[in-house]
Length: 363
Ligand code: KG4
Ligand code: ZN
Picture (tube, rainbow, N blue to C red):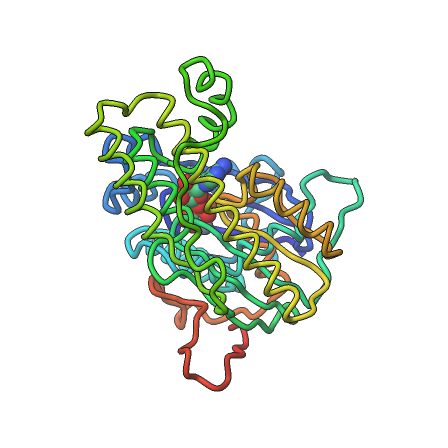
């Protein structure tokens, strides 16, 4: 079955054609990221305006790349939330129009669940792929979310915990700004740390950081995260170094290094603890932050030690794309009439903490 996925929840405009939920026939992503660099964060209005301009050309390109027409598709799938309302509306209203005009089934998709389906996509056609086994612990760490989920099978998951304030990617982005690094902050911090070791040594800094930042909620029994305190701790360090006239490249490197260590320590430790508690077979990563090489390295090491299968998508499938939307729709094939589909910007994996039945059926 051939699915067209459409994704416009944030600053990307993406369309992808996927066969049988695993084989990527095309995967086109346009981003308005450059337009947000000056502001250091996404301006929703600008993102949505760009998506209005880009979506039709992006879908056309995606279909052309695999010599298909909308008529040839078996199904359409679109992200309905969570995300920016204006951005989501562009994708959802376009998908509904196409479903109506061409009489195609349309599957509404939760963006966060979609991130996990990067692990079912085969990035290298014709090469055998390690399909994730259930039950699995999924960590989705992105710009807007940090959630730990127990995936029992394709249709059932339990939300175990999430961020109480800033998401991991948001923390990277905000802290990068404090350090004078560009948006998006995650890749900027990762790049600086990867290339900065030698430079810092030359400038009189050392790989052993002079700063030690907190690992928020690391030893807390819950599966929640909290990264806003880390941001405040960095702000204090920046102010203190500035006061002493010592806020230089070496210090920026040391802080970036320690920030990356702190965020990755917490994400890895809590995920492994959840895997142990729920006796799962595999650990799945998803979301932009899972493109972080240090995080991937730590996960490889700790899942190997604890003997869990680890599934990490290639970096281009960690960040927002529409192939994951098509894959999620294939494995959770629950089409709904276009008349009953609407955007849900606040869509959340979480259920109330005092809710006795934490289990939720997808769709
Ligand atoms: O999943 P995503 O593309 O969009 C959302 O759904 O939010 O994630 C974007 C986030 C940004 O906060 C960005 O800084 C972070 O993912 N990110 C990274 C890396 N690449 C993207 N964070 C750390 N290291 C990276 N290599
Ligand atoms: Zn995302």
